[in-house]
Length: 57
Image (cartoon, rainbow, N blue to C red):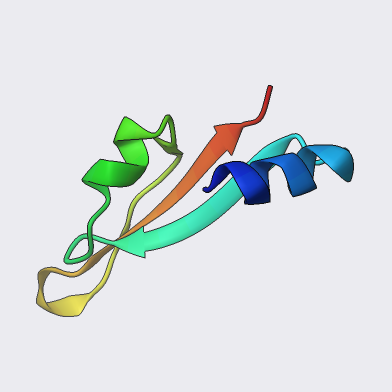
């Protein structure tokens, strides 16, 4: 989430940013930015979906 998007979300009283990523995508950078995985959903062929969220302060 860029500083611009964060400021726009905060101006609209948003307090939680949610996203979904898959295991074959880059979830590590999202974790480094403070997003936490809230669940995992397995799919066939070893694919895993990771819903993530970050509380905005």
